[in-house]
Length: 281
Ligand SMILES: [Zn+2]
Image (cartoon, rainbow, N blue to C red; front, side, top):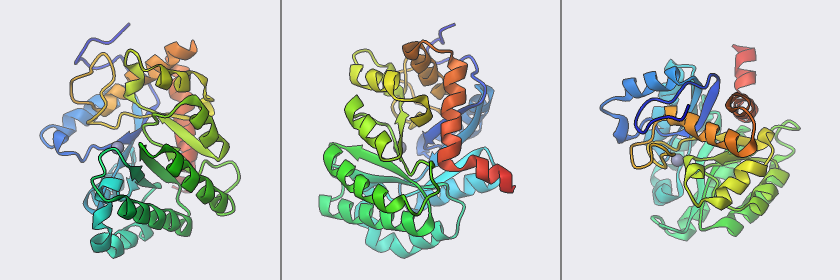
């Protein structure tokens, strides 16, 4: 049954939101209720992602108190201009453990809130930190497709000896490129994360990607509080709405929503290392 705008989605048990920002000020008033709706919608994991030192620390704290949270820490390209100030503290935070990946990091030449040279420096430094700590990377790329790919292809080559065979080394968060670029990323050991924008009418490029890449290389995410999927477009996004994206992908591929939830969560488990964490618990 299709969801109604603004109402909680019909549950889809076992699903993972692979990219959220529940630390966002948009959730300050009602974060508890938002999380209650997420668990009620069937989510088993929320990957909470930092964009600077302060928010990476928040993600670390959430994961420390609730095992359903997975922490990812990084300095976003918009925040790259602060790298000089925060470098030592950020490195100590990551090296202290508790993070499943470094992100979101990358290049954004759309807004260019930090100068391109500073973005490139922060990106390169964090890619090196990922190799040194054995963590995979979560990438934000906007209007920088070819440069990002070239940088990551070189990095993936260096990473291949540092990671166990078969483990994905990177994730393209909120992927908005075409199918050909998605396949090139899969070929270098990356997974592709499908955001709520795939549900938008006219997003044929995103729908082609979601229809065609192997589910073993696919994640689903909200990027909440942004990029709200249909039928909730225009409202604040929240982790529960990842269910809408998974249902839409299932319809595109003519498979069951349960199959998409199960497969994308299994991909998330391999990428973020949930399985290892469960084994060593
Ligand atoms: Zn994000």
